Image (cartoon, rainbow, N blue to C red; front, top):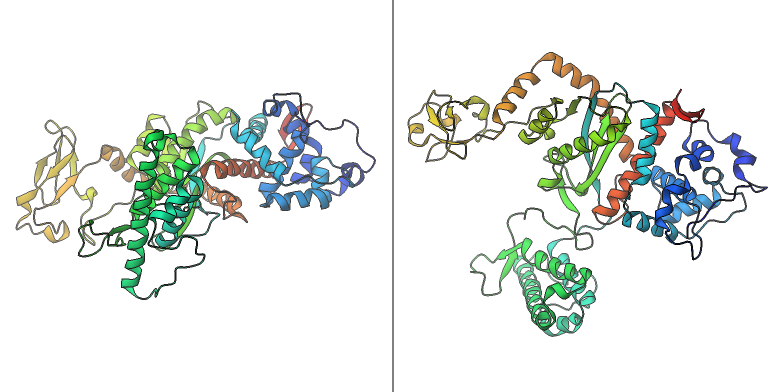
Length: 535
């Protein structure tokens, strides 16, 4: 059942004894005074539908701890120690000097209840409602998008480590598979700890080890599949076991290819000379991914996306995704966040038209089309143009006439016109032979083929508008605040604390709620005559 706070203060209540020592305008001071108003018990009643059982902690206490924990980047154990020994924390959550803390797993329990509820981000929503009540966003018609990569919470694994770990996991969680590992996995001793004992500078030794591990994985997959046939197949497994089998199949194929002179049937394998798309980088956290923030800077983990009001620095929406993949791209998530901002903007701008500020990662055709269709103005750096040849022609050097013929036409830099096909491709083929501009256009013996994107006209118009000094002045003036908000988000929290997207996305929303609350206090948040206002 849900716990409740005692309405009467204890003799050694910290807020009564030393509340005047809390820094004015701090989150500690705010929660000491307003935690029950910000997080009323009724807000969490659905988490404890039964009135029976042992009472939990008061919900406003736990919510305050979660806010302070994410704000200061503490583990569960560290947060409980702070509640036990730090008078600022005791005052903020409403405890007396002599009150003991609670077990760290209590926070895990509450996060699990929140995650399974219909409103898992209610702490974020509560702070968002305070933003709405202040009216701070009234008349604010700009939104800035950005993202940053957060390191994962697990160790990186190479192909060999992943294969060994995946085999062990199947043996551990799939019923009856432990015996199959012993029987069919003969290429390696999976009870052995530590790194395989081979000459790692010997290429043949490495290939022999990879071959043994891949063959063991394939043999185990076949054996598990055969053993499950009479029980309904893989679908009969519990989710954890089914995921283990699927992960084994994935890691057995994503990083390997037949040896140089093998046809793939003789059991000889090597590490592939390419990187698999959407590559799993750890069997411990299969949702972590490689990310290239720049050409020379690679990180492993997840990506945190935000939409920020640039005058106040308040984060109006956020989402955590894989660090790579089409659904995790800045432009794709940016569209979702702007859609979220439409409902979020009960915070003061519902129905308004925005200037959307973002860097070139958000300048894709679909993103510009979505912004335009919603009636917003894109103050987004244009999508970078790439040429097939260094210092060669880009798509901008080709003229596109959407009205010419059935599907339109394309004119190359040499003045040659070709009709577009139904798939919006223009083939110049033989006319490239002998063309004086060919060296800057194509190296293909078949001539140049130009693929025109669906939103090509919109992107061309946007590139032209982006060259206007007024466009650039707005971008330079209002863009920096989102960079500052990202810095606040990552300060002391460059690494996520949990495994997987769901748990870390919940953590991110609570972190953003804490940052927004702190930002509101800097802007002068106070409660006056029953209303949230800014001084």
